[in-house]
Amino acid sequence: MPTVYVMNGPNLNLLGQRQPEIYGSTTLADVQHACEELGKELGFDIRFFQSNHEGVIVDTIHEARQQAAAIVINPGALTHTSVAILDALNTFDAPVIEVHISNIHKRESFRHHSYVSLRADGVIAGLGTNGYLMALRHLAPVIGAGR
Image (cartoon, rainbow, N blue to C red; front, side):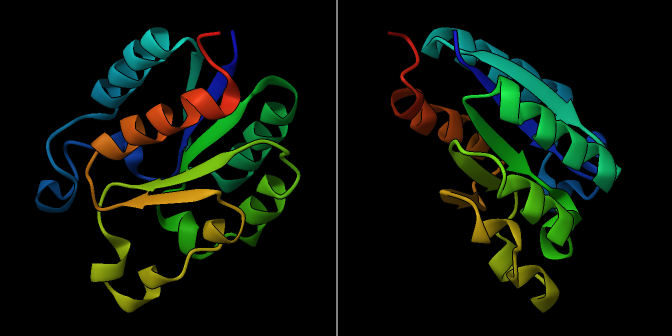
């Protein structure tokens, strides 16, 4: 069964607690459970991951090079600052989908630029935590899951 890495950056561990008016009340554990259940339905394994540390995220992307059929990534604030994450994603030779819970283009101007988008095969923003599930549904036929 193919594996999809679902990666989350800084402060997403506080999902459901931090700024619920922007990010909603769903917790990261809720997102993980929903992704794992949908993964089973679609025919692939989920490796769910969150870190507040840029280097750990880079290391996990490097690990994914050997383990993953695709990456779904919500880099949080590192979206707008991390050339290191972009460089790591550029070494990954499979699909990458960038997800943002909020619509980053309706927020502060510094959030409008994404380094990750320079590598991502698709970007989902502003659809809440459903964006993760949309990314997984998109990936299923792309990576040949369920065959």
